[in-house]
Image 1 (tube, rainbow, N blue to C red):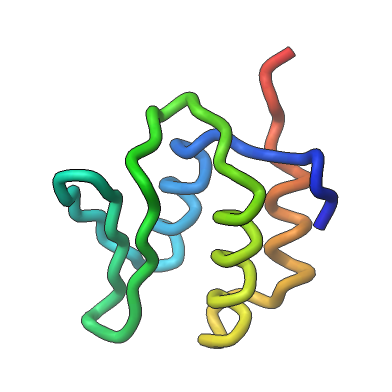
Image 2: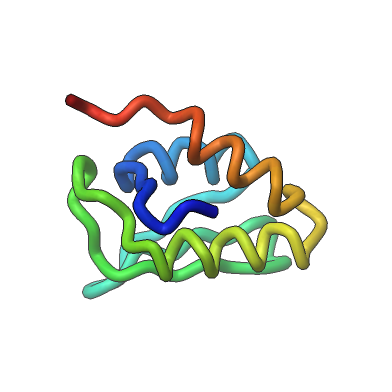
Length: 85
């Protein structure tokens, strides 16, 4: 994963929803869970805010470990998202 590439939080949110995650809002976090099997927690982001590299890297790791998305496929997803000029 290229360290300089990022996507907006809304793009990541939409992608996680396509993978079957449901979002809950905590006071200071976004919590995504999937059928009570696993969850991903992010600090509060604005929709248009770029996702921090460490959050993308962690998401990539867990989606791969849980068998939901191969790490290379996640990289392709991030690389394929159009970023505003």
